[in-house]
Length: 429
Image (cartoon, rainbow, N blue to C red):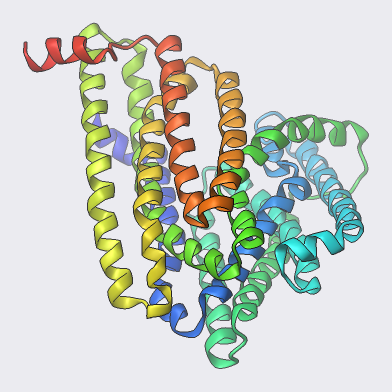
């Protein structure tokens, strides 16, 4: 059975996507010893603020249109899908136009809070638009189960981004603007390239269809609160730190966050492999099988917390040894962020039961509630104790999310989670 699984498209694609995720998340971390020689904490703060702003407006520019295309891929004929994608493009143009108008109206307020030059506010709109074009192109490859071109495209974009950024920062000495310019040009180039691929692969036709526009908006607009909730988990911290404490503190927090989030990368990678196994086990599971799953889950909980402790200690040492003195302050955030993402890993172990039971509406409510909780706590803590408050808010909101999701999962798929009962039956049998 395992040999058959290894040969399956699902296994191969999962392996490719996991490696791709590690590559895309790991490269920026490996570049830190280089970039921190040329950039200051203030520079990193400006870069993080720009990226956060792009992420926020991308929710309203994109309106989850790549997800709409991904779902429609399996419901429409090829000729219908081409028309649908053409009208999705029309939606993106209109949404980008309206977001531009809103930014023009509130420009003074936005510039004051973000502390970015005016030009980058409008570049962010273009970047958000181009991101969506690339997302649609990648969604089609994923829907076709073509992981190799998907991975090649993603890796090419990442490398192009890095090379341009290093050129502007090191050779031309553009500072933080060099990093933003490099990433923006890469995103714009690959966005245009995605349009070319969509046309060349015969996935695009520009004929107006009100039904397609309504269908796409019916899918995307209800997801705005969910997307905003996810963005608030990290994006709002950057904006709060920048406006309340300053861009230098934002830069140190961002560097510390890049180390801490590594735990999340490992947790997500493990979940990619574990979730299909769990769903298969739950089909015809016995009481003994449930006990084994619970035992494994508790061992995983302890393991990921220990792993977070050990990896954080290593990262703090690496920051002190390999990064310049001006960035040593980033180490104070590493432990808290690592443990926050350790609890995210624990959340992933229990949320799969909700997915299995198809009770996703519970998850949406929890996500929205805990995100609002995070925003409120983050603002108060940052205001009173500085940037470290964002890290404390993260760990509190992740713990709360884990507990609430675990509680719901125990209701929708009953498992022997009771600790006393579990230890009596499993350990002291």
